[in-house]
Picture (cartoon, protein in one colour):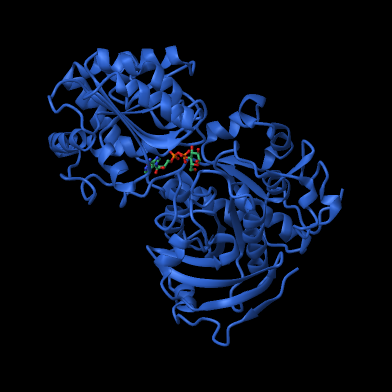
Length: 522
Ligand code: ADP
Ligand code: GLC
């Protein structure tokens, strides 16, 4: 499918082989495994949302389980800037007609293979959209090339390193397993669905350009409502499919949440698992966070107040000290229920609270929120933008974080909120339903409540939850208890990484689930 030729010195940085051979602390029952993780974003190099947080932090936790992950990521400008001048490990001379080099770096605790293909990745804007916010028109090619490169690596393109398993994430890398099956590679593949709303749906006319046989346009592989879907191809050809919470794993089997893929998933039900995301406890730690004016922990929660003052100043809100500060750090989209937040903002303000909304997304929702904020000068602020330090300051300075998602595969902001003593107000769906314990009477008296949940997921439901939060906030003792209980909640990666490692082990060392091997035939 493509020819790769190697640089005369295969590992010019000198540390590639060393990194791979580095001794790791192993769990006795799990033998070391080499995993190629294929992703369109990875923190801290390139991030548009939670996917990057997961692909950036899971490898470190897997390392503690005896799994060595190398992450393949496109060479966007931000990634190449971070790498400096790494010489290529190898050059692909024909990835769907593109020439690309493969660079290696070890940075921020991650081993990275970077696919440097300027024609596809060196451009303004974000990983998926141009500077004006429109999808890059050749996303079908950009991510097919990433997937094909991954398949080549699984097939041994890099001398001295063949992964035992490939882990793909979302539609952008889902074609990897399709290419691998076409190359008759036996390597197992795990596909993680982070959000089934994004499916990589393109015209079926592209099949020949993708180097794929016309008969893959079939219900058993890529065909999807008259088009092709990269995600569907991945769902059909991966050994195990995971998603980022057990509740979402159940939800996507239904027409309401499956977004057209519920039938495909139902057929692969026995290969579907839900594993809740963890968080990077070093990066999201109020006791050491460099983005907070004042660090604190559960024992010094009073210090959070100084961050609240800094936050109000940052957003130009009145500094007087009454009422809770509610915030949202989110994509401003229908999925995230940000239109419902706009409709309920008055409730917060009229009851003495303040509201900060920070994010970007749907232009109409940005406008809707901005207009509400205009009615509440000094008490509500909306800022359209994306900025990691500000996101940290918001968690550090807010009393409550609102996340009224209509669907939420896992959600990370509510986990960061818990750790920062900002009480989450969330809808009861997906990962939100299993990471937050609602402050009902029973949970309050058992001292286990960590936030406020509402259901049904409607504007009225959100309004009621906000009223409950405002009411509890008037009782400082109860509020502090909620904060403390939330800060004690355990969302490190350790347990979830062990679950991934166990799935990998079952596939690599036998007893895999429903492996699909060899070229796909109808
Ligand atoms: P999703 O991936 O669906 O957007 P998650 O809750 O899983 O939702 O992850 C969102 C991630 O993106 C979090 O790390 C959050 O802090 C970050 N984020 C969202 N909006 C912004 C923003 N405007 N600026 C900085 N970080 C943001
Ligand atoms: C997606 C989901 C979010 C999840 C994240 C990381 O963006 O929308 O719920 O937390 O991926 O898995």
